Length: 104
Image (cartoon, rainbow, N blue to C red; front, side):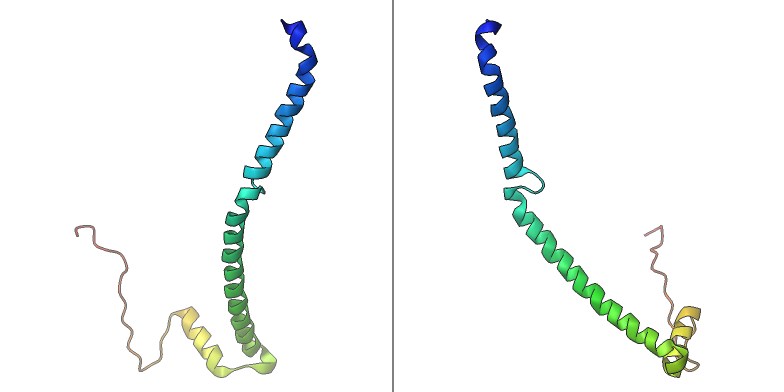
Protein backbone atom coordinates (compact mmCIF):
# COMPACT_ATOMS: atom_id res chain seq x y z
CA UNK A 1 0.00 0.00 0.00
CA UNK A 2 2.87 2.40 0.78
CA UNK A 3 4.28 1.80 -2.70
CA UNK A 4 1.06 3.01 -4.29
CA UNK A 5 1.06 6.24 -2.20
CA UNK A 6 4.75 7.01 -2.66
CA UNK A 7 4.34 9.14 -5.84
CA UNK A 8 1.79 11.34 -4.02
CA UNK A 9 3.94 12.03 -0.92
CA UNK A 10 5.78 15.08 -2.39
CA UNK A 11 2.45 16.53 -3.53
CA UNK A 12 0.92 15.96 -0.08
CA UNK A 13 3.96 17.50 1.59
CA UNK A 14 3.78 20.59 -0.65
CA UNK A 15 0.03 20.87 0.03
CA UNK A 16 0.67 20.76 3.80
CA UNK A 17 3.36 23.43 3.57
CA UNK A 18 1.12 25.65 1.44
CA UNK A 19 -1.75 25.17 3.88
CA UNK A 20 0.50 26.16 6.78
CA UNK A 21 1.75 29.25 4.94
CA UNK A 22 -1.80 30.31 4.04
CA UNK A 23 -3.04 29.89 7.61
CA UNK A 24 -0.11 31.94 8.90
CA UNK A 25 -0.77 34.63 6.29
CA UNK A 26 -4.35 34.95 7.47
CA UNK A 27 -4.08 34.49 11.24
CA UNK A 28 -0.43 35.00 12.24
CA UNK A 29 1.03 37.90 14.24
CA UNK A 30 1.51 39.92 11.08
CA UNK A 31 -1.37 38.26 9.25
CA UNK A 32 -4.25 39.67 7.29
CA UNK A 33 -6.83 39.38 10.09
CA UNK A 34 -4.59 40.89 12.77
CA UNK A 35 -4.32 44.25 10.95
CA UNK A 36 -7.21 45.71 12.98
CA UNK A 37 -5.57 44.91 16.31
CA UNK A 38 -2.28 46.38 15.07
CA UNK A 39 -4.12 49.55 14.04
CA UNK A 40 -5.66 49.83 17.52
CA UNK A 41 -2.24 49.36 19.11
CA UNK A 42 -0.82 52.04 16.82
CA UNK A 43 -3.51 54.53 17.89
CA UNK A 44 -2.81 53.82 21.57
CA UNK A 45 0.95 54.19 21.08
CA UNK A 46 0.52 57.44 19.14
CA UNK A 47 -1.61 58.81 22.00
CA UNK A 48 1.06 57.81 24.52
CA UNK A 49 3.72 59.44 22.35
CA UNK A 50 1.76 62.69 22.22
CA UNK A 51 1.42 62.68 26.03
CA UNK A 52 5.13 62.03 26.45
CA UNK A 53 6.01 64.85 24.06
CA UNK A 54 3.88 67.28 26.08
CA UNK A 55 5.45 66.06 29.32
CA UNK A 56 8.93 66.37 27.85
CA UNK A 57 8.27 69.92 26.64
CA UNK A 58 7.08 70.86 30.14
CA UNK A 59 10.14 69.30 31.77
CA UNK A 60 12.47 71.00 29.29
CA UNK A 61 10.84 74.37 30.03
CA UNK A 62 11.21 73.79 33.76
CA UNK A 63 14.83 72.69 33.35
CA UNK A 64 15.53 75.80 31.30
CA UNK A 65 14.48 78.01 34.19
CA UNK A 66 16.53 76.03 36.69
CA UNK A 67 19.84 76.57 34.87
CA UNK A 68 22.25 79.03 36.45
CA UNK A 69 22.25 81.44 33.50
CA UNK A 70 18.44 81.66 33.47
CA UNK A 71 17.46 80.95 37.09
CA UNK A 72 13.89 81.62 38.21
CA UNK A 73 13.79 82.05 41.98
CA UNK A 74 10.09 81.22 42.18
CA UNK A 75 10.51 77.95 40.31
CA UNK A 76 13.58 77.08 42.35
CA UNK A 77 11.69 77.71 45.58
CA UNK A 78 8.72 75.69 44.36
CA UNK A 79 10.92 72.71 43.46
CA UNK A 80 12.82 72.90 46.76
CA UNK A 81 9.58 72.96 48.76
CA UNK A 82 8.19 70.07 46.77
CA UNK A 83 11.31 67.93 47.15
CA UNK A 84 11.75 68.71 50.84
CA UNK A 85 8.07 68.31 51.65
CA UNK A 86 7.74 71.82 53.02
CA UNK A 87 4.99 74.36 52.59
CA UNK A 88 4.78 78.12 52.74
CA UNK A 89 4.91 79.65 56.23
CA UNK A 90 1.24 80.72 56.25
CA UNK A 91 -0.14 77.72 54.37
CA UNK A 92 -2.30 75.05 55.97
CA UNK A 93 -1.26 71.47 55.33
CA UNK A 94 -3.84 68.74 55.74
CA UNK A 95 -2.29 65.29 55.81
CA UNK A 96 -4.36 62.17 55.48
CA UNK A 97 -3.56 58.52 55.28
CA UNK A 98 -4.66 56.74 52.15
CA UNK A 99 -4.64 53.41 53.96
CA UNK A 100 -7.95 52.13 55.27
CA UNK A 101 -8.12 50.71 58.80
CA UNK A 102 -8.02 46.94 59.05
CA UNK A 103 -11.20 46.83 61.17
CA UNK A 104 -13.50 48.43 58.60
